[in-house]
Every structure is written in structure tokens, then in C-alpha cells.
Figure: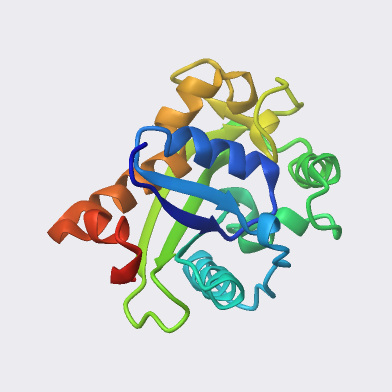
Length: 212
């Protein structure tokens, strides 16, 4: 059996957990939700995706004593001056209510022409070796698209049914898991993170628990 290092995903979002399992499938890092350790969600008091990612990663490290990866991501719409942004998960008032969030976006963009409906998904990833890690690894990436006038597709989660990709002529929620997990904002950020972990042999050090 190959050596694996358990890394906590600082999220209780099952959709994100599924994506991370798929994205890390070929690595020696074993991703486990903080929910498995009875860790509650951190208070996201930051004013940027990066700040919130670090807050969540540190919280998971403190509660579990293990290294942690935190993802803070959201949708930024040009016409709404970047909203819903860091408040994407609770845009309509209730955390994680995808249907309500999507409906609020559609109402806010009612009768707005396609040319002004540009948007992007943004993902910030923070990796912390331990709660007092003074040099967390932070990576950020984005995925460009536009907001449609109605929901389409059953795959994915969050704003995926509204996020139209011209290169695929469909919404993110209509992509297969394999395609989405190779081109999404989260996939891009993860590739940057894996590259950073591999630099100077850090990934190999992680596989030795005594090195953390």
C-alpha cells in the first residue's frame, strides 16, 4: 500500500469534496472533509477570497492537528461590480441555498444585455502545514464566462447552471465531471498548488508525517 498523507479539506460542502477527490485522484494526498473530524465552519471574516481561504485552513488545522487545504471561491459579475464575490454562498441570505442564490442573480440581471453579463468564477486555495504556519501556500485562478437568462444543466453545484462557456456552447452544469475538473477555476488553482507543493520536494516531505 502506498504511503499517503491525510490532508483536511476545510469545507463541509459535499460538492467541493467530490471535486477535490477527483482532482487529487492521481496524487499521494488523501483528502478528507473536516466534517469527518466534527469541525464546524470557520467564521469567514476576511474581505477577500485569499483572506477567507487562510482563515478556513488555519481553523481546520487548529481543530484537527493536521495539514489543511481551504478553498474560497465564488462568482464575480461585472455588471454587479464584482458581486456576489466573497458572499457567493450566502448571496440570498441563507448559506448554501443554491436555488435562491441563482434566482437573486437572475433578478439582478433582469433585462441586462448579454454583452454586459460577463462574469468569472474565482478560486483561492490556501495550504497550511499547521495552524501556526507563517508561510501558507496560496494560489488563485479564474474561469471566464457569461451569465445566462435561465438555469441549464444538472451537473455541478452553486452557480454552475447560470455560467455559460462560449467555447463549449453550454453552461458549466452541462459539462461532464471530467471536462469541468480539467478546465475550471478550481482545477487551475489546484494545478498551481500541486506545482508549489512539488517544488523543493515539499510534496515528498508531506508524505512523512514527522516533517509537518
